[in-house]
Image (cartoon, rainbow, N blue to C red; front, side, top):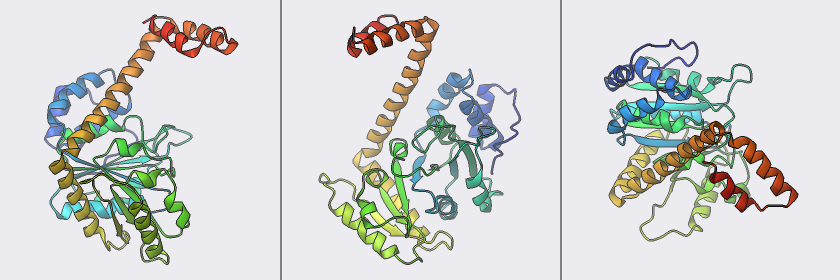
Length: 325
């Protein structure tokens, strides 16, 4: 069921009650838990602790690519293909933030209206709120909510910010890079950035002229990439998401990559690396808050002036700052 991102009703339900109802598949409870995440609620620690035993089951798929390649249309078509296979699907569509309200612009969710009445589909738009890398800062915790709620696949569609949009690769089990004809010449396919992070490459709008050329360029780029023995070899597929052409093969490729991840142990490695980054981010935020509580901000300002004047080097200044904690 599609949830409303605006005008959320605030529930007074306890965290254990919300978690229990989310586990039962109640979309209102899932939406409320994600709202607690987005709002950085004081109960967030309790939420994450309660969800932890139920996580680690969902296949997290990141879908990225430049604006205009058809990410939302492809995601919508992929949801249909996965539902036909009996999988419960959640979508986190990260939209640009409104310059007025700061909320998500909701363009992605509008394009996924086909699944609005399906109780086994949950779609949530999240505002990037200025966070770079194509995601929202709260995306990792929102994925945990959806994982614990029993969704088999969580699709994370990024904003679409171009070649720097690589953060999703550190968040997903499988990263899909979407491209389309007319979005750049052959040289573009060889540039660093999002074209180095994909586990699967999909040339959408393949009914347009130049699709075969894009696919050929991608294959050429991947053939030049050095990979260890037994490493995953990304496929390059063609789709026309608007009509559904090639979408079943897209879903097959995702299942194939998940099987490879499990068989090789790469899934556990990726998730451990993801958890490490999440822990570091939380610890860093807590450390900054602790500095503020201890009045270390003025100490930091003093140290910054010393470094700027050349009377102290930045490493000894960092050591001095750490000594205040």
